[in-house]
Image (cartoon, rainbow over all chains, first blue to last red; front, side, top):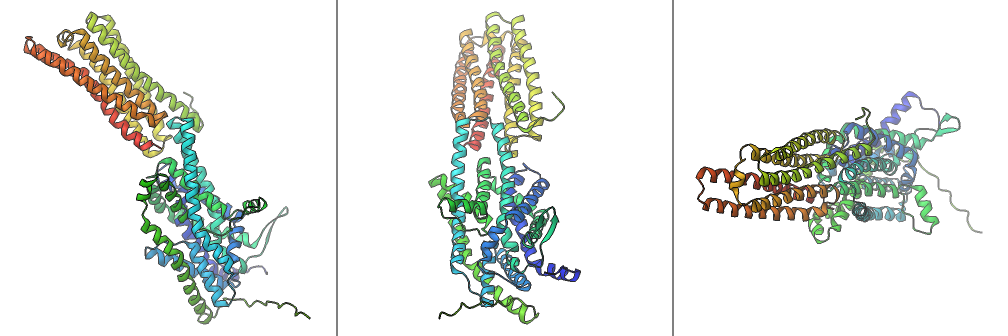
Length: 371
Length: 221
């Protein structure tokens, strides 16, 4: 690809703006899932949490974001920059509409719906196996988080009862644990959710590989992810504070150990669904690898809290607000359907009203006829 | 103490040591109280009993220093913030208990010097002092358990409540005997106040047990 001149750069950034908005929104909302309890309970200053969160989100996005993003790309490769812009815009508008309507929403589900909308509009085939695999993760993700949370909590309680640490040392350990789990969670959030932010732009990236010298180079996808990571960081710094303090404070109604377990379970789940080395290791052990796709961090947190509630037996089950869970499950259907329909409509408008190319024609060579 | 800031767990260990010393001092306060009262009952006001008061004053000063050091470190560095206030309140209550112990001995040396004989037979007053001291010791043990094993706090809370109830029973018996006697009214009133000063310490221990029961629920796993 030719070097970008100033005009092309501005145009490209304009087209990337919908993805950057999704990134900003992710940073504003999901940073609370990793650092909310530490900031909400005033264990960590917001500025420190925002700095750590931003740094590790960018690191996770640039170094390990390819796996989950490729998983999303397998569903549909949006191959024109205007098409990517419109697809991301459809997802962003769906998230904004659902949030405004007070309905539970996940940007992953909106992006998946928008990609299906693009496939529908462009006449591309939707890989149904990949689609069902992704849909299955929406159910597996909170369940896995619940299982991790229950297991980690049990292990934590057993360790505390065995070692009987002094309360001060236990709390110092929990504080440190919350910061480390927040860092791990930020890295996993960047690695997993960058696919939501920049995944639809990968096949239409306006960037080209840049050599940094000494044999080092940064690919066009990594440049996209860096930009997406920066957008997430801006979201963290500009808008996550009120979310962190409210969500964090409500999370801290759990015990300090419970809060740590929830953050850790969320980070583990995000890591599992984004780590390529782990997927390879599972395959080499003959175990079914988890699909590398973006998953909802908020739903992982809800799953983890649910896991802790179920650990308390009947009392915990009674405290669960099943109506909230039913609304989340309903979002698994309404969000992608709305995003797909909105994506289709927007693509039509952008192509026919604004005259932008939203689909790049692709030649599919036919196999040689058999003699 | 060194000026440089020690590492996270080193600071925690330092704070742990200070807290342990603080609890040791409150516990020692209970022992000095029992010894001081025993000396008063046996020998009346004298240098031995006054020495116990001096020991209690020194203890209180050391406890105050420790409490201030713990408060500043706790607030700036340690603990889950929601729990800081709870621990500081507990320390304040324990310090208040030690202060009341010192005040009780001081009052007996100054105001109730003659009331010791009035309050009742030395054996029965000694029994009241022993029960009150046990309630103080149970409060210290309950506080120690909160930091090490919150599940065990419940047992200590139960002990405090039993001792407090026993102290009330003994006080009632001694007061009834006192007011049934043909002593002059001013002696009866002086004796009543002296008994209330001893029994009041068990009431303070019971207040600590209430505080401990809430803290233990917060920390139970």
